[in-house]
Amino acid sequence: MRMALLLKELRECSLYAGLALLAQIHFLGEGMDLPLIPVLMSGRGLEIPLLNVNRETMFAGTAILAAIVIGLHQTMWESWRQTTLLLLHRPMDRSQIFLGKMLAGSLLVFGTSALPLLVYCLWAAMPGTHSSPFYWNMTLPWWKDVAIALVCYLGAFLTGLRTAAWFGSRTWPLITAIVVSLAWKFAPVWLLFNVAGFAGLMACLTVLILDTAERREFP
Image 1 (cartoon, rainbow, N blue to C red):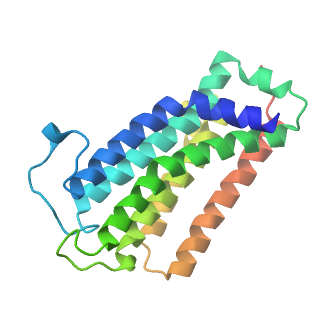
Image 2: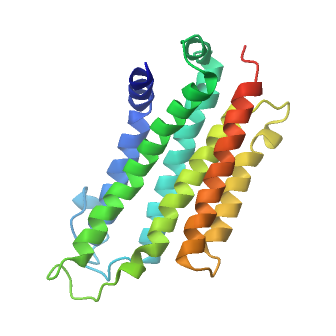
């Protein structure tokens, strides 16, 4: 039953994840002089890996956008289509159902951001691929982008799950997730505190999601 729910969520959101993954492959592949779409190549050739601010911005923007779309699809879109009622009639606790949905969404967000980034980092770490120095601490801002995408996914999930008369108040979880995670990204704190901060944000959002799911009366 749980595996069927997980596969169902992965399948329904696979289009968004696939498009995001293709975009990430192109953006990061261009940094390796191996773009997915050669005609869109900027023509600058090899660069110092992980230090191109524009490339990091494109990577982060794609990851965050995909995370928000997936989170809203799993909640607001399904609520609008009233397919959530079918899930709630399964012989499972409501918390398990929504934990399964969040697990599937998190896997998709992680897969469309962390996996291509890992390939890019391993390429940059290999000798002979470029003539620039490489240190693993250069990858830290990029991994923070992955964490921000996960936080934004949970914020979008909570936004789509909440009920509010005014759409502006409904989006507060997503807006707060974006603002707080970006502030944490640029805060001059140690790595351990970065990990603890993002983990705390995701834990708080998860608790709020489960509480909202238990309290909400679905039509």
